Image 1: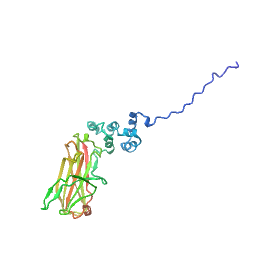
Image 2: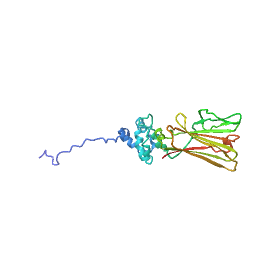
Image 3: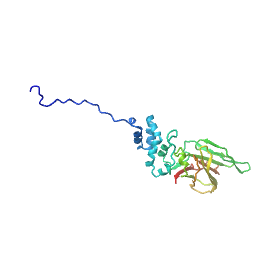
Image 4: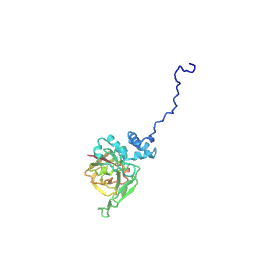
Amino acid sequence: HGGLNLLGPARVPAPHHEPQEAPGPNQLPIEMLQKVLSYLPPSTLLRHCRPVCRLWRDVVDSWDLWRSILPWRHPDLWPVIRTCLPPADAPGPCILGRFCELRPIGRKLTANPLGKEELWDCMMLSCSDGSEEEEDLGVRLKTSGEMSYSPAYRYWYKGEILDLEEEGLWRELLDSGKIWISVCRRWTEQQGSDRMYQLVVKLLDANYATLHYFFHKRFPVRPRTGSFSFRIMHAFTNIKKGVRFVLFDHSVEGYDSWPEQCGVCRPQSSVIVQIH
């Protein structure tokens, strides 16, 4: 049995295979990549994932991604939002991403943050006989913090604006008839004297045409000692279609110099949008 292998047939070693790498994110099907990205916070998606590459940017900008995120990130708002979603084929990044990141519903939105341009509406002119004539001078842009001054009557005016779309609200939601817009204006002084205050708040469309108007007539603030403050509030309901901007027109008479030099803290204008 010289040629017999008592140990049995010889074993042939199995061929060596290199371990396969797991597919990277860019190799995933679009639907699976969208599913993976949907678990990340909206701010991470917009600030960090979107710049990675064109594929990721397209996914983050898509309507489908944010449509899948909304129901579980905003379960209380979803029954209303689902009835007035923006068009899926709207050009540019989907506004639902900004909505999910900024969460504007029920949050205090500040009109005209410092460092941005303000929209001014100069309405009141003083006539030579001492009466006041209202003349629409149109809408113009000025830098933040400026005020206009009428030497004859010491009339100070300041305008502030809030762009609702910049805050993540879209036209179909604003036009749904299920939105209330509450406005508030706070004013604080470090010293008191005889002054007259007036506030006008307008809801404007994309062309700055007035759709709604709230006027708080002039009222005096009598001299007093120490710091004091007051606020004016109003809620807009039954809102017409087309609202885009909230404009605050604030005026005061009785200062001999810039209001800030008289101990006046910067007025604070805020807006709260609610779904009912």
